[in-house]
Image (cartoon, helix red, strand yellow):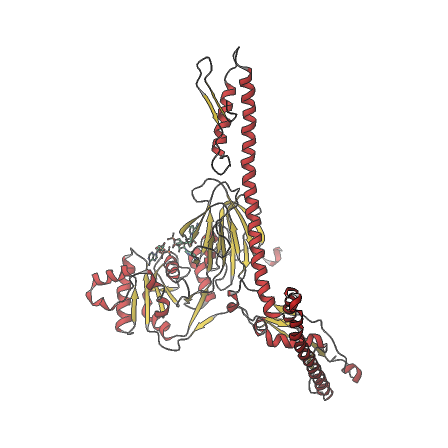
Length: 587
Ligand SMILES: NC(=O)c1ccc[n+]([C@@H]2O[C@H](COP(=O)([O-])OP(=O)(O)OC[C@H]3O[C@@H](n4cnc5c(N)ncnc54)[C@H](O)[C@@H]3O)[C@@H](O)[C@H]2O)c1
Ligand SMILES: Nc1ncnc2c1ncn2[C@@H]1O[C@H](COP(=O)(O)OP(=O)(O)OP(=O)(O)O)[C@@H](O)[C@H]1O
């Protein structure tokens, strides 16, 4: 009898007990068959032992049960080994990418290191050739050093004479150290890219002590420690979106410019083309659309684009609308941003989300008219559409730059993190939840490769600040002004008392991973649409997108935001206390 198979029909005519340990092609025992094997053994053992029953059969059944248990343990071990292997794979890929990037940077910047590598790599046969090349370099290096030394000395002399003449109170002088000066000067020439995005405290600051009169004291030099301020961006492509936000002046760090300011849009030439997007199935929206298209064409002489569905509706209204333009397929939509000066939305917040989702790159300014139940992003009233549009077309107008999140799904099968499916751009949020599964989600969260936490609950919301008044708010997240750049990290019904929502800075990349030991897959949805399954080992990467959604303001960003939370949510509405409380004499 095969040790893995036991077929028995006992002498009393009991049913056949069949225990089999299947061994699939990959050599691993699947857990279902292990479960069946164990069950069969249990059933067999529960049969009442009768006199004369073969002792060996019982012994063998017990042995088999032990084997089944061992197999189950092996399967569990395999799952955890897979999880560990995936983690190592991920770390390896990250490390490799980082090394490649560092190598590229180093090879671009550091000539000495390049020479070192060159030296190591070159064979003895080439050593003489290399020396022949290096000697003239060294000669020019020395000459350069001498020249820099002379320049430094000349500058020192200039500074001292200027100060002696009492022309300046505080003057920066170059570090007299020749080596660092050579370094700085070469940096200025060779690393103009870096200079743009970082600050070198290559200066030593000299301040005259104000309370001193003597010459000796006047010449006293206060040296401040040298330092450098620089900042990172995500990946190489992030470079174009870097901002100089910190200035270095006299050793004090000050922010010259902050990213969230009220932005004003002024037309330099008249807008020519308008795209109108409308909420479907609404009679009031359809009536308004007809009036608006007529007015924009007849009074403002503008080209009007609408969705194919709306063009059909307009033509059903009147054949005069044949001038209205539309598109035939998705490829034409991808070029709309190059034709359209302004987008008008007629509907609620959902229509603004719809408009944003049509633009997978840059988005033209949006003028959102409110025809929905709530209007957090729709400050314009449809009754006054002519006045509103008049003033928008004339400009200047205040706009809110609403940041979007760029979300990419990376499958476990992908060879590296850059191998992703088509990305999604969300204006509100990306939600990772348990879908129809009744198990808790189990999500591992990382922020720029630092472990954040494990989400065990209904799921997680990664929201923009514009989306902070939507699903994230319902899940207990804070309301944040839409001009604040940041990523809200809000758990949905976490099964833990201490899991409070977070707000992460805008420059990070958040990575949400479904671990291999997760009981069920998770589901991602983007602005409440486009559900995607995340199986064990899959991950979702989320970072700030470079294309915000500019929406026109009724007054300005702050006024519109506060109005929306007061009107939309009745935020902190409470009856004011009457005056008849305790008087001074009662206190
Ligand atoms: N429990 C919840 O609060 C919950 C659940 C699911 C989805 N949502 C939200 O619905 C959004 C999709 O909107 P939709 O209109 O396509 O679906 P929808 O028609 O189901 O409307 C959802 C509601 O959310 C409101 N809303 C949308 N964006 C908002 C924002 N930025 N600030 C305040 N309220 C906002 C809308 O005005 C609407 O009343 C999702 O992005 C998500 O934020 C909320
Ligand atoms: N042009 C469009 N084409 C297809 N669907 C759209 C379009 N505009 C809006 N929608 C969808 O219609 C739904 C309802 O839209 P919207 O939220 O604007 O209306 P509402 O629910 O009446 O208003 P509110 O959001 O204020 O509650 C949303 O799910 C949205 O995605």
